Image 1: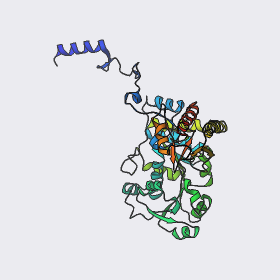
Image 2: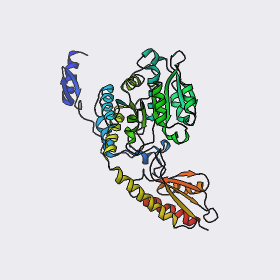
Image 3: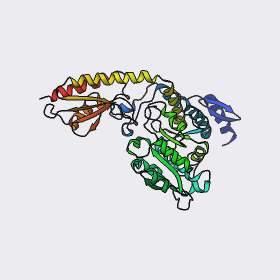
Image 4: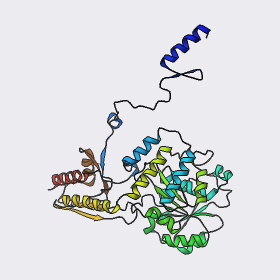
Length: 407
């Protein structure tokens, strides 16, 4: 570029922008992002089906809906750069205080918390071991003791780290199974009723032999006090889903527990590399959104919310029980998804519709509705993911379909 061209360049540049240390910058430099006036509805644009969720917080149904405070935390934090570890530090401190833990971190769901918690028990702060996972053959400790009834699909999260599972059923078997190779004792809270050893005795055995413990309480909130019940009880690591009843981002979860184990877990997680958890990234917006959701959840009126659920369930129950041959029973699961649940069954001789046909009619209706199918002529529904007024729509649609099917 010759002198004349250079003068012409800077003359034009100053019209459209500013000069910074002799460099022309566009006039929009440093200006905040301004979204277009027309907001896109991508769900409508892509032709995606939306529905009333009377089934629950299933991953396939995109779990729960976030509150406005959570969305605002995500939106506001998306406008700034911050250091990743600082976000985890600050949010971890807040979550730990709420949940009565020494330390905490936000993970990419409860599954990630299980993987990272197991990794922490295997490696500690040893970066050479961290880099070796899931190749644990040379580790001095590489076994995890688990009750046979707790050896669920979710245990695959632990086996991702390369551990050797050791299944037990009784306290006597557990004591025999614990040895110098035992890295961790795992408890799946959802399966507690099926196991022969309850969590208090499981903890007692672990402490007797000084073995770290980890518990999965992914869907075991509500009640709200479960957020700190198991840390207070003495579990070394607690894994929680953030995208269910707490209504944080679906892809977020929490790992709570001992300070040294959380520190070790973070070494196997982003932003660090050369580890088993590098792909389990949870972004800054999700970390802050998870904290906003948790803070809101612990402050809300849970007694009021429970009464609202009971009223919604009662309305639906009354509507369907008016149909001859239809029965509805209210129950509350003892552990996971501990909310009022309605099981509806019907006499096939009086109500000529199959469970699959009913589900399909509800799904294809307007609005679309999702419920859980049970064995035989039965469905199950819950109301804790309903939006205000949707219980009336659900009651009406069920009544309509049952009425049409009556002989």
